[in-house]
Image (tube, rainbow, N blue to C red; front, top):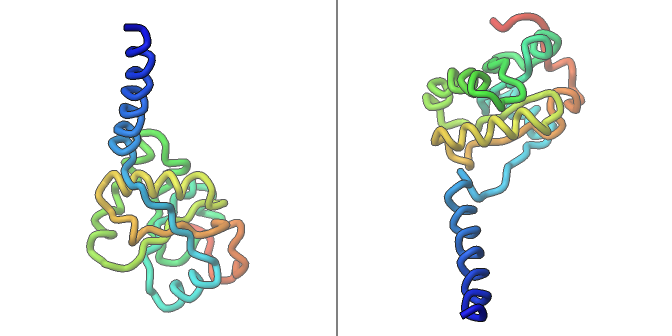
Amino acid sequence: MKKVLLFILPLVLFGAFIAYSFISSPDTTEAQYVAPEVFRNWLSQDKAIVVDVQNYDGYLKMHFPGSLATHAYPVRSPEQKKRVDAVIPAIKKSDKPIVLVCPGGITGAPNARLHLLDQGIPNTRLYILKGGTWGFPWKNMMVSGKQN
């Protein structure tokens, strides 16, 4: 009996792990990053929706014109996720790519991506600005102060 249990138990645990992986993951595809050079073109040609998840102070220092401000950084708490939810109606009105922007492109934007996936926004539309606002080389394309 012990030999049977030693054989079956690992199989059951492995199956449970695989099932959990598929159920708990909102999307099994990788995050898409947009290079600053490509984003610069999208921005200048109004080819993307920009969702800015920087905190309020970071947004005031520098953001992209026309970006949807959420002040939701780092997009972990329920309150921060609600701030991202506020821009979903604007996202759904368009079929443009969505570029998620945070200071470094490492924490807030990826967290916002996962939350938007949970809200039904397809991964094919979601991009993260590689390097975030800190790594964007054309600072003259950014503005400071409150949004319009």
